[in-house]
Length: 336
Length: 129
Image 1: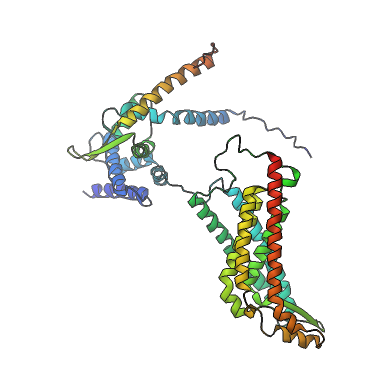
Image 2: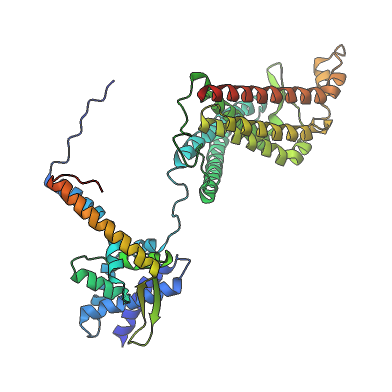
């Protein structure tokens, strides 16, 4: 009786190990496996009572429960498939490199602006930031790509190719040099990291007798309030330049995506710069104090600055959109 | 700098054995579904199928067959029913109409593969089919 119990327990343990991570038909599979295992044992013992050894032999024949479970599973068991993996690696490298670069820059600025920090502390916080932020960046890139994989998004130009859609070898002018999107990506990520972690460093750096001090440009409370919009904008830029990087050539589709991204960012920026509250309110007076001069009407310039800035940004985006559209139409015409 | 290293092919006996057994496995993998469908015009439970295939010289491991039966059922080629009147409950599988149709088509493909491969390997005249 005791033997029967231990035999049954062994079978239960095996079956549990197979089915514990299965999500569908679990009880049915359990039942069927139980029937299979008892059949196999019966054949082995020719109807006699099974010993522990018989059960072990049968279970060994059935093999690793994890492999058996794999057979029953029909869903994907990878986070990022082979199609997305090269893109994943590219983006990961760019993001980690940008983050490292950003941290080096901030640490240097930090060491210049704060005098009461020792090199030891500086290096310590640098390493700490590299590790924690590095993992965070790694995590986010991985999560985004896992979602893309889960949704079945294809990053390649055409999902189903035909002879007609096989792109011609691009003319030299139609190729987008990798350096352009990569540098834009690095800049976007750097700016994003800066905004998120050290927005107080965005300012004018003044060197008085070897001591650096910063006059902040932004109103930090207001900046924190607008942070979601800023991050969406940076996300849109990252998406746009990632697409450039992967497409690698001008095309109508690239132009459309770029123009849409530009419009979104322009809208976001017009909300962000809709009034002067985004700026540090004592900026003009502090600059005046430091310059010790009332010749330059900094107050007046500052007050209308927002309007001009927005106009300049709009012009830049419009020129950018027109250029991309022009190039894309030109090169895709030549291609056909 | 040019890469001038030429890898020498696996020339030891264990290498060739390993390669060939891998290739045999690959060759047999494609025939598993056909062998399963061929036996299930009348209902059978998994282990009786394992035994029957093994007796016919086409052994399939239970841990391959059981998940496969479920996959084929999901595709609609097989249907199943629990039989609880016997000494213990068993799940019987049988081909559906769809499964029969698939089996017949696969079978005729199989015969033409066999014929063509035979002609190919014995160097007879090729016939376009």
